[in-house]
Amino acid sequence: MLVRFELSDVVIRRATPADAARLAWVRTASWRDAYAEIIPPRTLERIATKDAERMRRAVLDRRFGQTVWVAQDAANVVFGYAWGGPQTDPSLGFLGEIYELYLHPAWQRRGAGRMLLVHAIWELVSVGQHPVCLWVLAENDARHFYESCGGTPVGERSVELGGRTTKKILYGWHEQLPLPQLLR
Image (cartoon, helix red, strand yellow):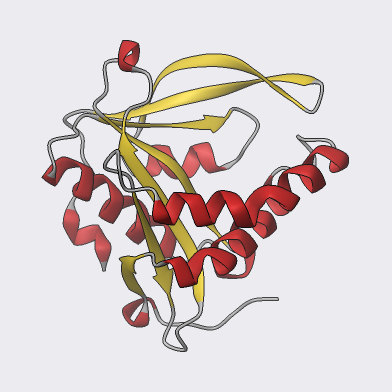
């Protein structure tokens, strides 16, 4: 299913508690699409059952400077989000982190993900949380997207997912920040 939308109609805004269920829908659909060959189905389903509560907490928890941004289309359908805030591991040398960036598969590969990423990075820069990083599974094709947005691979770690060990790659934005004009 391909959803028709004009990039000029996409609105990036702060998430509200009313968005939590839609964000869970986006995350679950995205994980099932991106990780079907990487993460065992049972693990994906177990994760999906926790997505609604997890996203509700993400939207409500602003104590630590975290923000969730949503992308919505002209019909006010929330189809993607970026969740960022302070770096959770100071040993990495980054001040800000994009914890998650997901678009529902029907809205992917048409520029809205770039809009969300650029917006989230520049929001972190504006509050002094720069340089910025994010983690992505090495087997996930999204790593090419982050590279096309100026992210540089700067590290990797092993992670256990559903009884399987895989690698995740750390991407960083130091001086090579994506330019704000990429928003449109």
